Length: 86
Image (cartoon, rainbow, N blue to C red; front, top):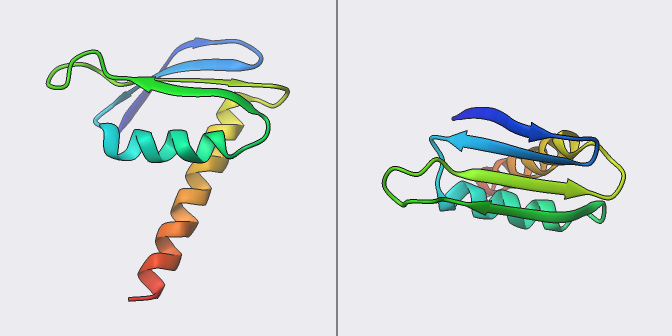
């Protein structure tokens, strides 16, 4: 996965997430939207074969990068719990 910041302000960020698709980005978006500080979390893939996925996150107060990190940590924890049950 290669992440590139396209645009960033105090409470929003737009990223290119090269090497990912709907599988991860949908999960990330879902976890971001569970955060009460996240106002908007959406992603687009302009073309299914050659498009670079773009993630947009807007927060109420916190740094949007911190919100993304928090959501990723939650995903990691859920995966570890799932693996532990096997």
